[in-house]
Image (cartoon, rainbow, N blue to C red; front, side, top):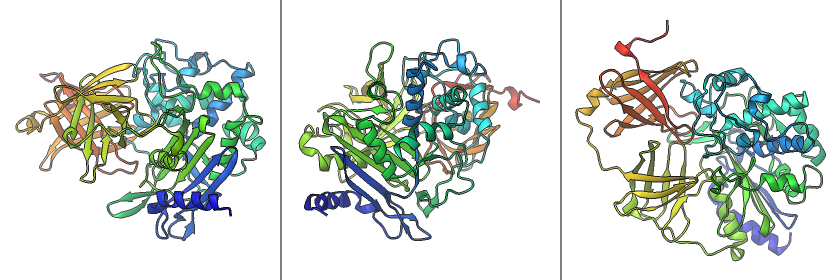
Amino acid sequence: MTEPAKDLESTIQEIVAPFDRTDGPGLAVGILQEGQIRLRKGYGLADVGGGVPNGPDVPMRIASLTKQFLCTVVMMLHEEGRLSIDDDIRTHLPMLPDYGRRITLTDLMSNQSGIRDFLELRLLSGGNFADHVCAGSSMALVESVKDLNFEPGSDFAYCNTGFMLLTRVVEATEERPLEEVFQARIFGPLGMTSTHLVRSDDPAIPGRALPYIETPAGLAPGLWGVPLDGAGGLVSTVDDLLIWAKNLRNPRVVGSPDIFASMTAARPFGDGTPSIYGLGFSVLPYRGAPSFGHHGQLPGVFAELAIFPTLDTAIVLVANTSALNPFVVGRRIADAIVSERLAARIPDPVGPMLDGLYHDRERDAVLEISSTPAGSVSVTTVMMDAPVDAHSPSRFGMMWPMSMLDLQQAEDGGLEGSAGPRSVYLDKLPAFDPGISLADAPGRFYQPELKATWSILGSAEGLRFRIEGPCGRQDFDLRMLAPGLFQARMREEPCGPYRPVLRLSGTNGRRRLTVATDRTFGLAAEEIAGGEHPLP
C-alpha cells in the first residue's frame, strides 16, 4: 500500500469513526478518482448478531439509487426509437385516471409530474411500509387518485409513483420483467455481478447486510414489506457501484455521452426556473463544484452516490444503519479529499435566535429550526431532518438532496425566500396555549379517493389523529400549533419519522381536514355529518 493510500484511508477512518464498530452496524465506502479506485472498505457490522463485518463486496439495498438505472434504460429505449420521453404516460398505461392534462415520461423522470407518491398514499390510507402487501395494491392506490399536487412541469415533489409507472412502461416495451432488462442491458455488459433487482425481502436475501434502526431502546430491524421495482428495488455492493461510476465517467459499454448528459443536467421548470433534479439524478453544486448523484433511503438503509465531474471524483456510500446521513457524510469526505479545489465554506447565517417553528401559509408546511450548545443547527420538515446549508452570508437551506429551500430571515422575524419556482414566506409561530380550542377539534372526516376515514380524537392524554382505511389503521399523537393547525406524529414509527401537518377549516359540521407533507399538498377530507361513515 502506498503512503498516499494510507493517508486517504486514515482520513476516511476519522470521518466514519462513529460507525466503525465491533458491536453495531455501519457502512461501506468507495472512492474513485481519475478513473482509479482509491478506496474500497467496510466499517461496522453487516450482521450484528452474527458478527459479520461490512465490506465493499457485501450486498446491501441501495433504495432510490435504483432510479438512475431505470432512467438509463428509458433513455436507451428513447434513443432506439422504441418510445419517446415526450410520450403521455396514459399512451402507455391507459388504465391511469384522466388527470386533465398531459404528463410525459420526462415529467415522471424529473419528479415534476405532480402525481402523488404511492408510498405516502399508503400511509394516508392507514398502512405503513412494514406491511407485507402485493404489488397490485400500490398500483390500485395510484389509480384511485386523480387529483395532482401541481400542474406538470410547474414544481417539484419527489415521487416514487413516477418510477413505478416507468417500470411498467419499460416492461411493456421490452416484453420482459425489469430484472431481465437490467441484467441484459446494464449489469451483464458491465460485469456488475452482485447487483440484482430484488422486489421483496421475503425470503431473506442471502449474504445481504441487515438493515438496523437506532431507537431509544437500542437497535431494531429495519422492516420493509411493500414490493419494490425501478423506484428502489436494487441490491448492490460498493464494488459494483464503483464499476457504474466508471461507466458514468466514460460510457463506452452502457448508454452514451448524450444519454448521461441529458440525465445529469437539471431539468428547468416550465417558467425557466432552475431545478435540482435531472432524469433519475439529483443535480446539486457543492462549494462551487458541479455534482450529480442520488440518495437512497429505506428503514435502516442509506445509500449515496456523489459524482463531481470537474474534479474527476466519485464517492459511494452504502449503510445499514439509520444513524447517519450519507449525503452529509459524502460531502464531508469531499471536504477532506478535494478541499483545495472547492470554494471556501460560507459561515452558516443561522443562530439560536432563529430557533422555532415556521409555517408556510400557502401549503401549510411546517419547518422547525433547532440549534445545540455546540453550535450545530438542523432543519426539520415532515420527513426530513438535516443540517443547515449556507447558500450565502444571509441565505440558507437544508443539506439534503431533495430540498429546494433558499431562505433568509424576514424583517418581522419570519423566513422568506423560494422553493424552486415558488416564492415562500413562513411565519414564525409563537408559543401557543390551545386552551378550550382542544374541545372543538374532534371529528371524523372522509377522504373519498383513498376511501379512508381521518379522525381527530380527544383523550385524557390529549388529542390523537387516527387514519383508518384499506391499508389498515395508524394512530398519531397530535399537537396543536395554532388555531386549526396541528402537527401529527406517528406513535409507532417502523418507517422512520413521519410528521404530517393538518389544517382544520370550516364551521357548523361542514369542516374540512387537509393534510400537508413534503410530498403531498392539499389532500382533503370532508367532515362526516353526525359521525356516520358515508359507505355501507
